[in-house]
Image (tube, rainbow, N blue to C red):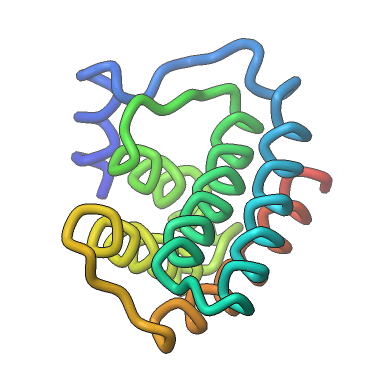
Length: 142
């Protein structure tokens, strides 16, 4: 875990970002907005688009966590590695929620790049995303 995170730092995929803390509220607002849009798309039966939207809701909540530590990502993979090192290893954020973000990333890629998605997969992500965002909000507001 630490090796992956350090490699992301070394390659500049995770960087110090002095304005990060100021952008936390915007990222959380975006996460909540995207989750709301994902719910609407799901209700409308557009499971592909809802899958993509729900991933980005979680992505923005994760980015808020990273910004709260004054870091910025230049890779979705490295964002996940950073959240693992900065929050999961330190037991501030549940590992199962980070796993849900990884699953959302995979399902978003399947929907986006391979035109494969499912109602059940999307529904599972919607439930995970709500918990993910709530936990992120609690952490950055603590």
